[in-house]
Length: 130
Image 1: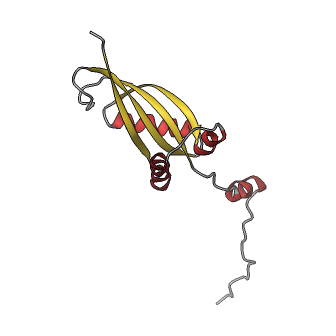
Image 2: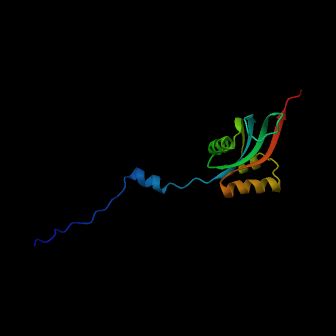
Image 3: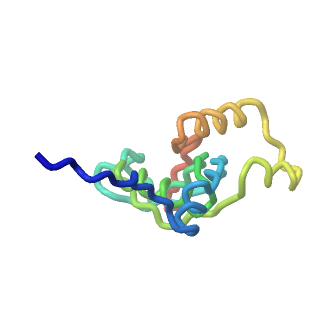
């Protein structure tokens, strides 16, 4: 019976570009303050005579664009009709602009960060003046 030939073990060294991508540090999530205007949609849960609402949201994301995308997606899943989103920045950005942030607001922001979620802190319905 012939002996099996001896082979050197195979090794794989990834190309430099792949190696760098694998060691790229993960971007840290932050919480962003967003004001979302929504229109009416069937079964949206808004008061019957309202024409829409403004929602104050705290959303987690690696950047504000991701926080906006996640917020809009979640509101659509909740049968709401997002029309416009205004971003007021991350907690650090708001502090740098000397915004007053009370303990309750900070707690909601921390919750959004810990749960990697969107927290709707306030809903203000809009009504016609008629």
